[in-house]
Amino acid sequence: MLITKQTVALQIAAHLRHQISLAQLIDWAEQTLMDAELDDTDVATLAAILARLVVSDVCAVGLTWEDYEDLLRQLGYVPRVPVIAVGIGSDAKQRQHGGLGTNDKENILELSVN
Image (cartoon, rainbow, N blue to C red; front, side, top):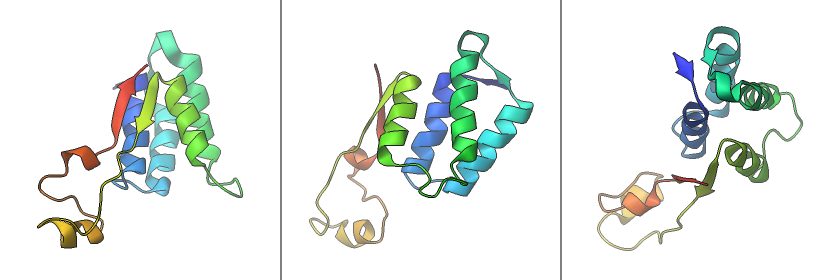
């Protein structure tokens, strides 16, 4: 599978949405560096970002929000995180436990192309 900037951005976004853990993101980045074909037009950027993800588990702090912003910007994306009220409407209980309510399309992290 060809790995593109979008592929890496989607993996980072999945982690930021708590769909995959940091350990899973790191494992994916490591496997991708070893086994996958990186897009020739962006190979240096992709390799650098994947390497940064791989070493994030040995850093004392890991990755900060600013680190994720920087990585996503290098990929051509900007993270946007809408903030919604908890405890309003019929989906309040579901939201309080980390889930999305049925009308929470705005609660999904969106990636915007620069």
